[in-house]
Length: 369
Image (tube, rainbow, N blue to C red; front, side, top):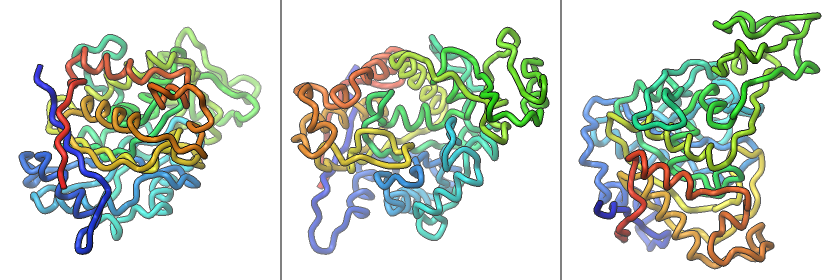
Protein backbone atom coordinates (compact mmCIF):
# COMPACT_ATOMS: atom_id res chain seq x y z
CA UNK A 1 0.00 0.00 0.00
CA UNK A 2 1.38 3.40 -0.97
CA UNK A 3 1.62 6.05 1.76
CA UNK A 4 -1.41 8.30 2.04
CA UNK A 5 -1.01 11.99 1.32
CA UNK A 6 -1.38 14.32 4.31
CA UNK A 7 -1.19 18.04 3.67
CA UNK A 8 0.13 20.48 6.26
CA UNK A 9 0.50 24.20 6.78
CA UNK A 10 2.03 26.01 9.73
CA UNK A 11 0.48 28.94 11.58
CA UNK A 12 2.82 31.66 10.29
CA UNK A 13 1.19 34.47 8.31
CA UNK A 14 2.33 37.75 6.78
CA UNK A 15 0.58 41.03 6.05
CA UNK A 16 -2.36 40.48 3.71
CA UNK A 17 -2.76 36.86 4.74
CA UNK A 18 -4.52 35.15 7.66
CA UNK A 19 -5.16 31.69 9.07
CA UNK A 20 -8.56 31.36 7.44
CA UNK A 21 -7.02 31.98 4.02
CA UNK A 22 -4.30 29.45 4.82
CA UNK A 23 -6.90 26.87 5.84
CA UNK A 24 -8.75 27.41 2.58
CA UNK A 25 -5.54 27.01 0.57
CA UNK A 26 -4.72 23.86 2.53
CA UNK A 27 -8.00 22.06 1.94
CA UNK A 28 -8.16 23.06 -1.72
CA UNK A 29 -4.60 21.82 -2.29
CA UNK A 30 -5.46 18.63 -0.40
CA UNK A 31 -8.17 17.92 -2.97
CA UNK A 32 -11.51 18.88 -1.47
CA UNK A 33 -12.46 20.30 -4.87
CA UNK A 34 -12.37 16.81 -6.38
CA UNK A 35 -15.53 15.94 -4.43
CA UNK A 36 -18.80 16.57 -6.28
CA UNK A 37 -20.63 18.89 -3.88
CA UNK A 38 -23.14 20.23 -6.39
CA UNK A 39 -26.57 20.27 -4.75
CA UNK A 40 -25.44 17.82 -2.08
CA UNK A 41 -25.75 17.97 1.72
CA UNK A 42 -22.38 18.09 3.47
CA UNK A 43 -22.18 17.30 7.18
CA UNK A 44 -19.27 19.10 8.84
CA UNK A 45 -18.64 17.10 12.01
CA UNK A 46 -17.24 19.35 14.72
CA UNK A 47 -17.12 19.51 18.51
CA UNK A 48 -18.82 22.70 19.73
CA UNK A 49 -17.07 22.55 23.11
CA UNK A 50 -18.61 22.00 26.53
CA UNK A 51 -19.53 25.34 28.15
CA UNK A 52 -16.62 26.37 30.36
CA UNK A 53 -14.04 24.84 28.03
CA UNK A 54 -12.09 27.32 25.89
CA UNK A 55 -9.83 24.95 23.94
CA UNK A 56 -12.39 24.05 21.24
CA UNK A 57 -11.91 25.27 17.68
CA UNK A 58 -12.97 28.82 16.94
CA UNK A 59 -16.11 29.17 14.80
CA UNK A 60 -14.05 31.08 12.21
CA UNK A 61 -12.48 27.82 11.06
CA UNK A 62 -15.92 26.25 10.59
CA UNK A 63 -16.98 29.24 8.49
CA UNK A 64 -13.96 28.79 6.23
CA UNK A 65 -14.83 25.15 5.56
CA UNK A 66 -18.53 25.92 5.09
CA UNK A 67 -17.73 28.75 2.66
CA UNK A 68 -15.53 26.45 0.57
CA UNK A 69 -18.31 23.84 0.45
CA UNK A 70 -20.82 26.48 -0.62
CA UNK A 71 -18.44 27.79 -3.29
CA UNK A 72 -18.40 24.26 -4.71
CA UNK A 73 -22.20 24.10 -4.84
CA UNK A 74 -22.74 22.14 -1.62
CA UNK A 75 -25.19 22.60 1.24
CA UNK A 76 -23.14 22.46 4.45
CA UNK A 77 -24.32 22.11 8.03
CA UNK A 78 -22.45 21.76 11.30
CA UNK A 79 -23.25 18.69 13.35
CA UNK A 80 -22.47 16.64 16.42
CA UNK A 81 -24.42 14.06 18.42
CA UNK A 82 -25.63 14.40 21.98
CA UNK A 83 -23.46 13.35 24.88
CA UNK A 84 -23.83 10.27 27.02
CA UNK A 85 -23.00 12.13 30.21
CA UNK A 86 -24.82 14.95 31.98
CA UNK A 87 -23.70 18.38 30.79
CA UNK A 88 -24.43 21.20 28.40
CA UNK A 89 -24.88 19.00 25.32
CA UNK A 90 -27.04 16.09 26.48
CA UNK A 91 -30.07 17.02 24.34
CA UNK A 92 -30.50 19.00 21.13
CA UNK A 93 -31.85 22.16 22.77
CA UNK A 94 -29.04 22.39 25.33
CA UNK A 95 -26.55 21.34 22.66
CA UNK A 96 -27.52 24.11 20.23
CA UNK A 97 -27.61 26.65 23.05
CA UNK A 98 -24.09 25.59 24.08
CA UNK A 99 -22.95 25.92 20.47
CA UNK A 100 -24.40 29.43 20.28
CA UNK A 101 -22.78 30.31 23.61
CA UNK A 102 -19.42 29.24 22.19
CA UNK A 103 -19.90 31.33 19.07
CA UNK A 104 -21.28 28.81 16.57
CA UNK A 105 -24.32 30.36 14.95
CA UNK A 106 -25.57 30.73 11.36
CA UNK A 107 -24.37 34.33 11.48
CA UNK A 108 -20.79 33.47 12.50
CA UNK A 109 -20.35 30.27 10.47
CA UNK A 110 -22.58 30.83 7.46
CA UNK A 111 -24.47 27.58 7.94
CA UNK A 112 -26.96 25.95 10.28
CA UNK A 113 -26.52 23.44 13.09
CA UNK A 114 -28.26 20.07 13.07
CA UNK A 115 -27.81 17.80 16.07
CA UNK A 116 -27.20 14.42 14.51
CA UNK A 117 -29.24 12.18 16.80
CA UNK A 118 -32.23 14.40 17.46
CA UNK A 119 -33.82 15.97 20.50
CA UNK A 120 -33.04 13.28 23.08
CA UNK A 121 -30.22 11.43 21.35
CA UNK A 122 -32.47 8.58 20.24
CA UNK A 123 -32.81 9.36 16.52
CA UNK A 124 -30.27 7.04 14.98
CA UNK A 125 -29.76 4.53 12.18
CA UNK A 126 -28.25 1.05 12.51
CA UNK A 127 -25.38 1.06 10.01
CA UNK A 128 -23.60 -2.22 9.13
CA UNK A 129 -19.86 -2.23 9.83
CA UNK A 130 -17.97 -3.97 7.05
CA UNK A 131 -15.33 -6.16 8.64
CA UNK A 132 -16.46 -5.23 12.16
CA UNK A 133 -15.18 -7.50 14.93
CA UNK A 134 -16.73 -5.70 17.89
CA UNK A 135 -19.68 -3.88 16.30
CA UNK A 136 -21.95 -5.41 13.67
CA UNK A 137 -24.31 -2.43 13.38
CA UNK A 138 -23.20 1.02 14.52
CA UNK A 139 -25.84 3.36 15.92
CA UNK A 140 -25.18 6.61 14.03
CA UNK A 141 -27.12 9.88 14.26
CA UNK A 142 -29.75 9.97 11.52
CA UNK A 143 -29.00 13.50 10.26
CA UNK A 144 -25.34 12.56 9.80
CA UNK A 145 -26.20 9.44 7.81
CA UNK A 146 -28.71 11.42 5.72
CA UNK A 147 -25.89 13.66 4.46
CA UNK A 148 -24.32 12.94 1.08
CA UNK A 149 -20.80 13.93 2.16
CA UNK A 150 -19.03 13.85 5.53
CA UNK A 151 -16.27 16.30 6.50
CA UNK A 152 -14.50 16.03 9.84
CA UNK A 153 -13.15 19.26 11.31
CA UNK A 154 -11.21 18.17 14.37
CA UNK A 155 -9.47 19.85 17.28
CA UNK A 156 -6.53 17.51 17.86
CA UNK A 157 -5.81 17.16 21.59
CA UNK A 158 -5.25 14.62 24.34
CA UNK A 159 -7.96 12.33 25.67
CA UNK A 160 -8.13 10.51 28.99
CA UNK A 161 -9.55 7.29 27.48
CA UNK A 162 -8.62 7.30 23.80
CA UNK A 163 -5.10 8.72 24.27
CA UNK A 164 -5.85 11.55 21.90
CA UNK A 165 -8.89 12.97 20.21
CA UNK A 166 -8.31 13.08 16.46
CA UNK A 167 -10.31 12.39 13.31
CA UNK A 168 -11.24 8.84 14.36
CA UNK A 169 -12.50 9.99 17.74
CA UNK A 170 -14.36 12.95 16.22
CA UNK A 171 -16.12 10.72 13.70
CA UNK A 172 -16.51 7.43 15.54
CA UNK A 173 -17.48 8.48 19.04
CA UNK A 174 -18.83 11.84 17.91
CA UNK A 175 -21.25 10.48 15.32
CA UNK A 176 -22.57 7.75 17.60
CA UNK A 177 -25.99 8.39 19.09
CA UNK A 178 -26.33 8.18 22.86
CA UNK A 179 -26.93 4.44 22.45
CA UNK A 180 -23.91 4.23 20.18
CA UNK A 181 -21.73 6.06 22.66
CA UNK A 182 -22.87 3.64 25.35
CA UNK A 183 -21.92 0.70 23.12
CA UNK A 184 -18.41 2.10 22.67
CA UNK A 185 -17.90 3.05 26.31
CA UNK A 186 -19.55 0.10 27.95
CA UNK A 187 -19.01 -3.64 28.18
CA UNK A 188 -22.25 -3.89 30.15
CA UNK A 189 -25.76 -2.47 30.26
CA UNK A 190 -27.34 0.61 31.84
CA UNK A 191 -28.56 0.70 35.42
CA UNK A 192 -30.71 3.10 37.47
CA UNK A 193 -29.43 5.45 40.14
CA UNK A 194 -32.46 5.05 42.38
CA UNK A 195 -31.72 8.18 44.39
CA UNK A 196 -32.28 10.27 41.24
CA UNK A 197 -35.24 8.31 39.86
CA UNK A 198 -38.71 9.91 40.15
CA UNK A 199 -40.60 6.87 38.88
CA UNK A 200 -42.05 8.65 35.84
CA UNK A 201 -42.01 5.50 33.70
CA UNK A 202 -40.44 7.10 30.61
CA UNK A 203 -37.91 4.25 30.47
CA UNK A 204 -40.73 1.68 30.62
CA UNK A 205 -42.57 3.28 27.69
CA UNK A 206 -39.51 3.50 25.42
CA UNK A 207 -38.26 -0.06 25.96
CA UNK A 208 -39.19 -2.68 23.38
CA UNK A 209 -37.92 -5.53 25.54
CA UNK A 210 -39.82 -5.05 28.82
CA UNK A 211 -36.58 -4.54 30.75
CA UNK A 212 -37.37 -1.50 32.98
CA UNK A 213 -40.00 -1.83 35.73
CA UNK A 214 -41.34 0.54 38.35
CA UNK A 215 -41.48 -0.73 41.93
CA UNK A 216 -42.28 1.56 44.88
CA UNK A 217 -41.99 4.59 42.58
CA UNK A 218 -38.46 3.65 41.51
CA UNK A 219 -37.28 2.11 38.25
CA UNK A 220 -35.00 -0.89 37.88
CA UNK A 221 -33.71 -2.66 34.78
CA UNK A 222 -33.85 -6.41 34.25
CA UNK A 223 -30.36 -7.11 32.92
CA UNK A 224 -31.49 -10.42 31.41
CA UNK A 225 -34.03 -8.66 29.20
CA UNK A 226 -32.00 -5.53 28.46
CA UNK A 227 -30.28 -5.52 25.05
CA UNK A 228 -28.18 -2.43 25.77
CA UNK A 229 -29.78 -0.15 23.17
CA UNK A 230 -29.54 2.89 25.47
CA UNK A 231 -32.96 4.35 24.60
CA UNK A 232 -33.83 4.65 28.27
CA UNK A 233 -30.76 6.84 28.83
CA UNK A 234 -32.00 9.34 26.30
CA UNK A 235 -35.53 9.68 27.62
CA UNK A 236 -34.82 9.82 31.37
CA UNK A 237 -35.65 13.40 32.49
CA UNK A 238 -33.41 13.16 35.57
CA UNK A 239 -30.44 11.31 34.06
CA UNK A 240 -31.06 8.53 36.54
CA UNK A 241 -30.47 5.82 33.93
CA UNK A 242 -26.71 5.47 33.71
CA UNK A 243 -24.40 3.55 31.37
CA UNK A 244 -21.73 1.30 32.79
CA UNK A 245 -18.61 3.01 31.41
CA UNK A 246 -16.45 -0.01 31.98
CA UNK A 247 -15.00 -0.90 28.58
CA UNK A 248 -11.23 -1.35 28.38
CA UNK A 249 -9.57 1.58 26.61
CA UNK A 250 -8.07 -0.53 23.82
CA UNK A 251 -11.42 -2.18 23.07
CA UNK A 252 -13.17 1.20 23.13
CA UNK A 253 -10.61 2.50 20.62
CA UNK A 254 -11.27 -0.43 18.30
CA UNK A 255 -15.00 0.20 18.54
CA UNK A 256 -14.34 3.86 17.68
CA UNK A 257 -12.49 2.72 14.55
CA UNK A 258 -15.42 0.51 13.56
CA UNK A 259 -17.93 3.31 14.14
CA UNK A 260 -15.78 5.58 11.97
CA UNK A 261 -15.84 2.96 9.22
CA UNK A 262 -19.64 2.94 9.41
CA UNK A 263 -19.77 6.73 9.10
CA UNK A 264 -17.53 7.12 6.04
CA UNK A 265 -18.28 3.95 4.05
CA UNK A 266 -20.15 4.44 0.80
CA UNK A 267 -19.87 8.22 0.43
CA UNK A 268 -17.17 10.87 -0.05
CA UNK A 269 -15.34 12.02 3.05
CA UNK A 270 -12.61 14.57 3.77
CA UNK A 271 -10.75 15.22 7.00
CA UNK A 272 -9.19 18.30 8.60
CA UNK A 273 -7.34 18.47 11.92
CA UNK A 274 -6.05 21.57 13.66
CA UNK A 275 -3.23 20.92 16.10
CA UNK A 276 -3.71 24.01 18.24
CA UNK A 277 -4.40 24.46 21.96
CA UNK A 278 -3.34 20.85 22.51
CA UNK A 279 -5.01 20.40 25.88
CA UNK A 280 -4.35 17.11 27.72
CA UNK A 281 -8.02 16.14 27.91
CA UNK A 282 -11.18 16.22 25.81
CA UNK A 283 -13.20 19.32 24.92
CA UNK A 284 -16.11 17.50 26.60
CA UNK A 285 -14.76 18.75 29.93
CA UNK A 286 -16.32 21.92 31.32
CA UNK A 287 -12.76 23.24 31.68
CA UNK A 288 -9.45 22.90 29.89
CA UNK A 289 -5.96 22.51 31.28
CA UNK A 290 -2.96 24.31 29.78
CA UNK A 291 -1.67 23.13 26.40
CA UNK A 292 1.04 20.47 26.64
CA UNK A 293 2.98 21.55 23.52
CA UNK A 294 3.14 24.70 21.35
CA UNK A 295 0.64 25.08 18.51
CA UNK A 296 1.73 23.10 15.45
CA UNK A 297 -0.48 23.82 12.45
CA UNK A 298 -3.29 22.56 10.25
CA UNK A 299 -3.51 19.18 8.50
CA UNK A 300 -5.85 17.71 5.86
CA UNK A 301 -6.24 14.36 4.11
CA UNK A 302 -8.71 11.96 2.54
CA UNK A 303 -7.33 9.31 4.93
CA UNK A 304 -8.41 9.80 8.58
CA UNK A 305 -5.97 7.15 9.83
CA UNK A 306 -2.92 8.71 8.19
CA UNK A 307 -4.12 12.12 9.37
CA UNK A 308 -4.26 10.98 13.00
CA UNK A 309 -0.79 9.42 12.81
CA UNK A 310 0.67 12.54 11.19
CA UNK A 311 -0.83 14.77 13.88
CA UNK A 312 0.40 12.48 16.69
CA UNK A 313 3.89 12.40 15.20
CA UNK A 314 3.90 16.18 14.90
CA UNK A 315 2.89 16.62 18.53
CA UNK A 316 5.53 14.18 19.72
CA UNK A 317 8.21 16.18 17.89
CA UNK A 318 7.35 19.39 19.77
CA UNK A 319 9.10 20.75 22.84
CA UNK A 320 7.21 20.13 26.08
CA UNK A 321 5.58 23.13 27.72
CA UNK A 322 6.97 22.86 31.22
CA UNK A 323 4.08 24.59 32.96
CA UNK A 324 1.64 21.88 31.86
CA UNK A 325 0.47 18.43 32.87
CA UNK A 326 2.94 16.93 30.42
CA UNK A 327 5.72 19.08 31.84
CA UNK A 328 5.07 17.57 35.25
CA UNK A 329 5.59 14.06 33.86
CA UNK A 330 9.02 12.46 33.77
CA UNK A 331 8.05 9.80 31.21
CA UNK A 332 7.42 11.71 28.00
CA UNK A 333 10.50 10.76 25.99
CA UNK A 334 8.58 8.79 23.34
CA UNK A 335 4.83 9.33 23.60
CA UNK A 336 3.35 12.49 25.08
CA UNK A 337 -0.18 11.11 25.10
CA UNK A 338 0.82 8.00 27.01
CA UNK A 339 2.69 10.19 29.49
CA UNK A 340 -0.42 12.31 30.16
CA UNK A 341 -2.85 9.36 30.30
CA UNK A 342 -0.77 6.21 31.07
CA UNK A 343 -3.71 3.80 30.95
CA UNK A 344 -4.54 4.63 27.33
CA UNK A 345 -3.30 3.09 24.08
CA UNK A 346 -4.06 5.31 21.08
CA UNK A 347 -2.20 2.96 18.74
CA UNK A 348 -4.90 0.30 19.24
CA UNK A 349 -7.35 2.47 17.24
CA UNK A 350 -4.80 3.06 14.46
CA UNK A 351 -3.88 -0.62 14.17
CA UNK A 352 -7.50 -1.75 14.10
CA UNK A 353 -8.54 0.97 11.66
CA UNK A 354 -5.84 -0.19 9.27
CA UNK A 355 -6.86 -3.82 9.75
CA UNK A 356 -10.50 -3.16 8.77
CA UNK A 357 -9.51 -1.12 5.73
CA UNK A 358 -10.33 2.33 7.02
CA UNK A 359 -6.97 3.84 6.09
CA UNK A 360 -3.19 3.64 6.14
CA UNK A 361 -0.78 4.40 8.97
CA UNK A 362 1.99 5.35 6.52
CA UNK A 363 1.87 8.85 5.06
CA UNK A 364 3.64 11.38 2.90
CA UNK A 365 3.58 14.86 4.45
CA UNK A 366 3.16 17.66 1.90
CA UNK A 367 3.66 21.20 3.20
CA UNK A 368 1.56 24.05 1.82
CA UNK A 369 2.64 27.68 2.24
